[in-house]
Image 1: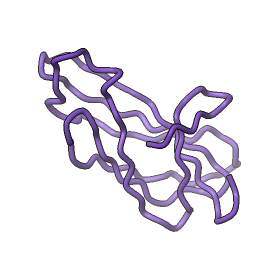
Image 2 (image 1 turned 120 degrees about the vertical axis):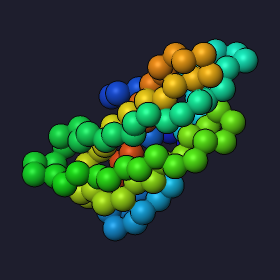
Image 3 (image 1 turned 90 degrees about the horizontal axis):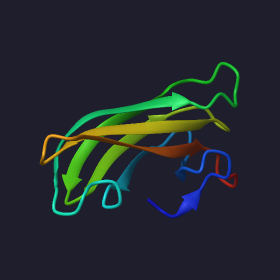
Image 4 (image 1 turned 90 degrees about the vertical axis):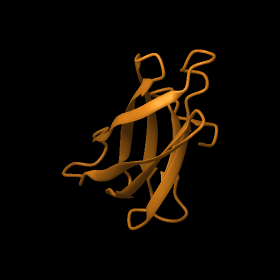
Amino acid sequence: MASNFDSLSGLIYEVKRPVEERTFLVDFSKVIATGKTIESVDDVASSTVGLVEGSQAMTVVAGSITGLKVAFKASGGTDEEDYEVTILLTDSDGDVVSDDVMVKVRKAGKV
């Protein structure tokens, strides 16, 4: 993911449009100990931050593992809402590791 940081949460974020399905790539190289690899992605889940009353869920689905990077697809979501995405995985030593990223849903021209 790009190096955009949300000033409130401190999470790295990316922006998608409400109607698009987009694939994001999350780098775990700073989270997983040196010499370990990603064995499996156990869960990918999103939750709303709560900026928009009655906002719709954003669907997230785990994708491929490439080295220490995990891809996930995100679709849907409500314009002007932020979604915290949690990725839970198991490394080659059997340790459970998680990381959070932010996906901001915005219509074209907004951030």
